[in-house]
Image (cartoon, rainbow, N blue to C red):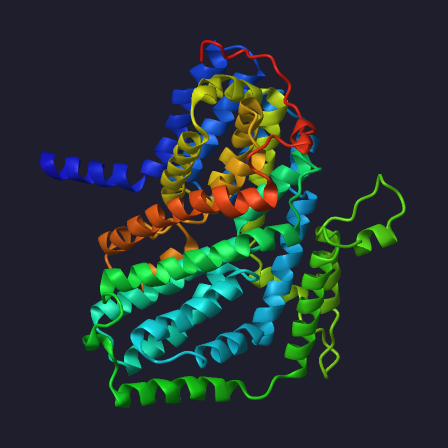
Length: 518
């Protein structure tokens, strides 16, 4: 009987470990604000608690994101009104507008047509078929949710795998290819994934004179996404079927015909492009052009033609919301709008909005309290280090954290610290911040690392160890690719070897290092 009671008690502890840790962890960290004076120590407590809650997923990520609204006012770091304003900044509206446009693309089935057309362009060997799935997945993930893109590709992939009677290695390779392509593709635009949005806000708010814009990011990041996609394609072949030349991975003519017929059938089911698809596609293209030509470096943008006052700036959120409003005003033949607010409410990932807002709120408190300045002061020990060593230390830390924590949460916690570190070391802030942002999305090892990983893990039935083996190689390869790209292409585009004048105008934290004994 005693053994049974002990076993039941253990089961209860396992079942309720998250609520227990949610109470005990903040208490365990309470000596920090109690025994160390200053706003910095209080902000440090909030950061550590939020980081632990995000990493261990003690509460839903969106719920954890609300903690600054509670603790910053209670700790006299920021007023409630000031914290709440951080949750709906211009960057949040940019992301919100982009998500509404993405929902419209899904609602019109335009994304399925694009994927179907691209799939039919490639050959039907396992290698080319994998590439045929990776390219549309990556391209769609640049503009719509990585999660939605992966979920959309799953039924198509599963049907193809059944038709070719794929063995285990081929199945795992194909599933991982879709997940990894979604993660990589999201890095190609500023709105493609959460870390990019967090980075854009950090630069836009703290360093308004930086050269980062929607156009400059695509000019820089899109080629890197292509390189990483090719590396991923080759790596998965090495892992599962070997390099090209092996004859045992060529499909029979009969299987090729079945797959070809299946893809043609999928395309035929879509029929001709509907009026809604043309309208959504046209408005989507208009939005991209508005982003491109708002303030391009090679010509006078439309923003300067409209706004006469230097005190007023049109950010990328304005065209995003404009197109979102227009899309919701498109009428069907029945007179009802093409995209209703009920559909937006149902499909909108409101948790991501709160997660990004929580990151902004967390960063604002770190800045207001002087915690950033204190961290930067402690990191002066890195002044004697070579820039390569500093970069790889940062990339390794980010890579480890982002495997177990949300990539958006990782970016929210680290980017402001890296901005302060860059100012302390007199390095171009973009050098470390862009590298870290890209690495946040290179989370390939665990099912919990990203939503695409989780969807593929569930659909494929593969073991966690299998994903870890393939993902570890991808993490290492992309880390070196990002580092090499920053030193070559990044230096040419953003002049990363120098400390630019615009960095001197970045917002300075309030100093006063009350955590000298921390």
